[in-house]
Image: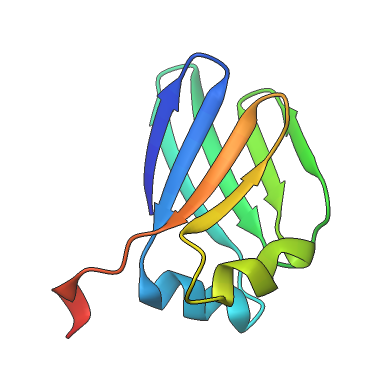
Length: 95
């Protein structure tokens, strides 16, 4: 998963294997740690809400998984705050 932050927004790009993991019910998590703190983003296929606390942001995707699985859709956006976009990034890396 690739993550980008901009003012009031988070954009996560997932590949085909990560989308398959979400479809199987597996959460995706990325974490960055530094002395005295850290940050975590979790994409949760079982949750329905967007919630954050003390460096942890959990994005519930249960209702949005059908949209992510639709080949005609590039991704989904959840209006927060923060606004979170999850986009499909299917390159030839697994071909």
